Image (cartoon, rainbow, N blue to C red; front, side):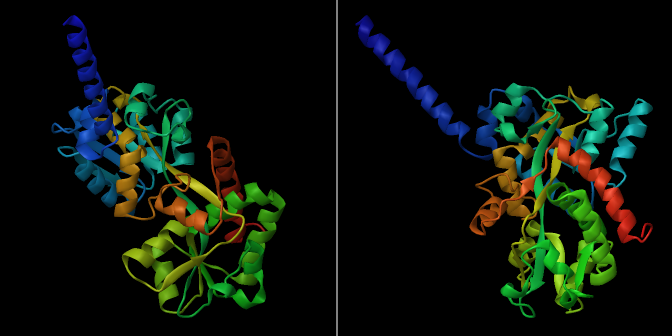
Length: 352
């Protein structure tokens, strides 16, 4: 009789383990309730988070995805291009106005060097399925998505075979006056390519873009895409995710063609040091960088897709094109910032 009871007990234990596993591989609230960390249940019980990011184009969809993916959470997302400076100034005054920061990797490294980012607990990262490859600088920075640089075009005006397949091909006379890109993206992508192709190549290429191609550099992507749609320019220097976004979401006649080699810059999330004990803040940051958060982000806005995720939209698209970008790490991000300053000086004509 005891043997039968023991067998029943073991069977019951196995059933509980099976059901728990089923919850863990599920999505949304089911997964979060099953996670061993208490951080996300707290977030869904009326938690609030203040998030600092770069631009409204990022802030609005991120706030929406967090609130729908973590029911009960309320998010105030603020866009401020001077975000790192703002955080440093407030920290020096003993203030922590924001909980979480979603920013470019170099910007977060500036804060990390000043000890302003919290180290996130490994057990919570594992519970929220944050890939080990997305964790950087002692779990202080988590990769969320990547911007992989490429060339877009209006397929009503340009055939795919006409688009340059290497960056040097852009400098051909036929493309003079026909290339447009927004300022930050162009500078950072040339700097990233400088890490792959050498600093000498980078400087020569920047001068050719300025003097021979006469590249049009505009303040924001919206201006660039309108110039492409109106036929004022023919090549759109952009992120591949942004090109996919315009094509899929807005049904515009925009497409992209692989250009080799290419570079992927990282947008990542961190919890600010002064908010390290805030379980709701930790949940929001880790959930964004985890499997469920990434899927929801890229479904909402395609450009928030991680090239390093083979199951993601961007990762699958790049694999189909047999294009493998170099996705930056901490060391590369630091170097890219210094190189971007040199590129900016060339493009602006401050150096010959």
